[in-house]
Length: 306
Image (cartoon, rainbow, N blue to C red; front, side, top):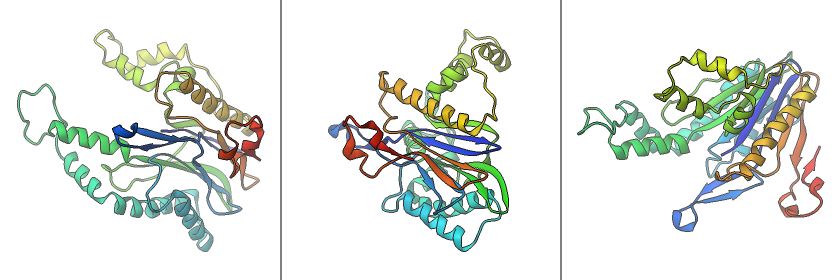
């Protein structure tokens, strides 16, 4: 799991993420293994005006995301893109080919189960065209474990207008289309903790309230109540403030997870990068190659380079 964020403003795009990645193991071996020095923010190519952020599924062994993003950079260098949307669509085609090849069996089964009705635990017997309990468990687990997201943003030469696009690959939904983001902040992975602070309510808590027999209001009524607890901020703050805001949200989530009883799915050094309309991709905070070697040392500053 991840806490990842993108902030789009007229000045540029800020990317940020934690560094923890989880490898699932058999329950006899502990169930999960966490590594704290994964990279989730990448420059697309070299001396580029584009960045990419990822969350969810951590890789497609034996091909790494780093390699696929480098291949995208090579393609953009040979055939310069006309728009950021063009870049996002090229990534969809490049990644989906690998994704579909790696998980062809799972995708086929998910597509078959998508045509059935969800499992109904209240049904007294089998439901025609309905999923069995085992099929429902398989469907939910595969969709959860094999869903992966990307955010591609920046600008292209000839048009310095910054854009950012969200792309979600889900084994049950086929090849996705990029979704353009509006100005402001967007979170992925585990946004519930920071949403509690910013909006006054986590998304899953909101669903529980709306579905509760004790709640008789409308979604608009709930919005009105929650608005009183929201921390208002402009969607077009100066880019350095956007960097600060992004870091604050990532840091707060990581610390909240650390001191909670929840699984430690977020953590490690925070990485931040920015693409401004007058400059190329630049790292704000980026792990050195020896960062894992310095774990536990007193010199915390050695974890980062500018």
